[in-house]
Length: 193
Image (cartoon, rainbow, N blue to C red; front, side):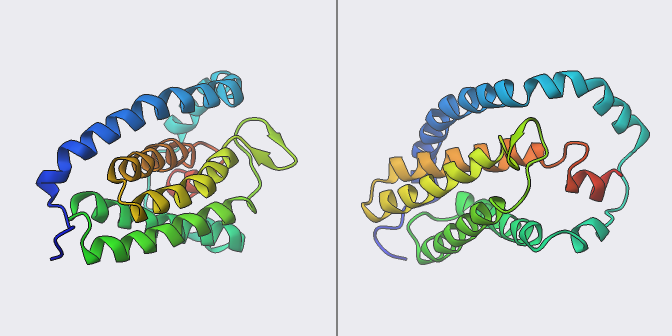
């Protein structure tokens, strides 16, 4: 192991502080974006969502909707799943190690491909403008933030790197991930429809 590799125990407090700082800003900003763009539609649709959940209990996944989806959606799903697995391994593994760097570059490519693929998917959650909805903002944030995270890591600014990556994980996987399972979305059809 290299000398610059940090053990998980040594990195833990730094990660917790960075995640707390990122979460402190990520959640309110994301909540405001969701409230302003999709809030009215979600509030009006809340009874319909509840009825739909009651009428369609979870079942074994039906992979048909994914198989018949556009290539942009298939690429988006494949790369986001790869990024999620890499994120889990990166968060619990030794920071600064060769594995961390290799998985980090894999994560970087997966996140950038995911963001670009997202721009070719028509928005259908909340209001949209020429096919672009509020979830497309996450793609733009990702396209800006991922290079900043790489630059911070290259400069050995671990705190900034951890904060950016943590914010991407919370916002991208958390908020956009939850939105992916709303009624009318592809993953809703896979698991509940």
